[in-house]
Length: 412
Image (cartoon, rainbow, N blue to C red; front, side, top):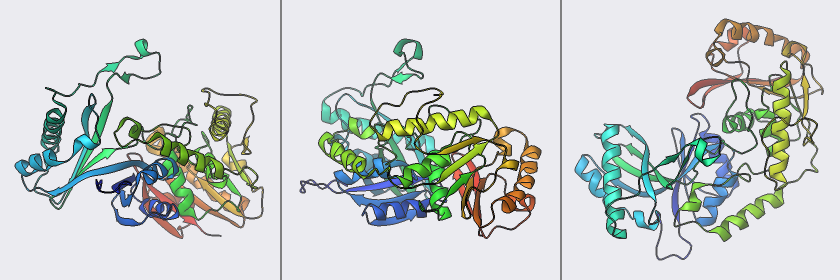
């Protein structure tokens, strides 16, 4: 929490991630010179200063959100929950004129477990504190402006809202303020998606879990909208994933535009397109390959400081990802060794489990066409190994959004 005696305050922070990606996020934080305090189920906790908040928001590849803890206290009943929430210093973070929303509640092994009631009480107590501090009768109510009136693709909120998440673990309450706004997997390069797109943060997680490094070739025979390949390119060229977007922290009282710009400049200075990378992919669907190429072009826009243009973009410069329209059964190794990392069609997402299982059987041919390569596959099918025809060397569970998935790795 904020230390008022320190000109450079220290914050307690939680990075949310896919269940199964905690190790990846912890390693990322350590590379950014943070000390990890605790790794939990889908959360990694650490402490940092204002500069570190922006480094985490802009630089973490596998985290879905960055949350600031503004209070932690014990509560075994609703009275204690109300009092603890009302005692938190909300006015240090939430400005006058801003709304408040309790977006998520999670409880585990605690006497308080009625999520709707917890949500209502936390909102009431926080609002009471803020109204008292700002001498107002009530907080502004969120109001959506329809698409037809604001000219954007989606409705937007006319009143800025601070989003709060409540975690209660063994009767210990943590009140967390969202610093991200849009989830961090929204990098800005993917304005077009395929039929069943993989989350950008999940793609980054499986790449890092696979052990792939920029010196090795990478191939994806089901490239779809290109997410795995583009995340690999971002990693290889040191393109920070948050360079092309804004964050909710800019609306809070702890925002520091100068610090943010310094952090962005530091990350942008690290980008190095001179590094040799061998990243390639294919898909049998021409439109998917066109979307992947367009998304890769938007990545180049972001890296070079331009606003990424929407839509499928034909004939424009690609940052160096080799894409082809080829069915998986005809994909072959362009190099003698490397990593094949892929997200084949999901039965649940595409609506045809038997078709997906037939594809998994056909994937067995990849070992012959990619000799000397490591193979890594993420799918929602727990029985993938039986269709592929070989037991994986390692298998771990990892979520892709709300879909529980499995990450199978095959060594050479």
